[in-house]
Length: 105
Image (cartoon, rainbow, N blue to C red; front, side, top):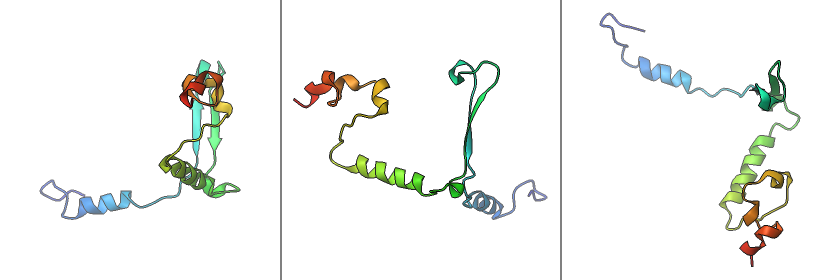
């Protein structure tokens, strides 16, 4: 909206910002991997994630964030063996691995 003086009318910016700030429901996502990292050479690999509202358990993401937040806010971090250990860059100082036991001794 441009007035005859070339500026927005009073309140127009606030009205536009308010319309941008209206909450919308997430609609899912796609991760597109290209090149060698995708493991394909002729086409892209697409990983789809549906909208949370369409999931069998739509609260899983909120539950995960709350669980992680509670753990991060705690006074202690418990080291646990998990699938990420195989490629963890700090395993040499992690007490669940023999080479990292010196951390707790």
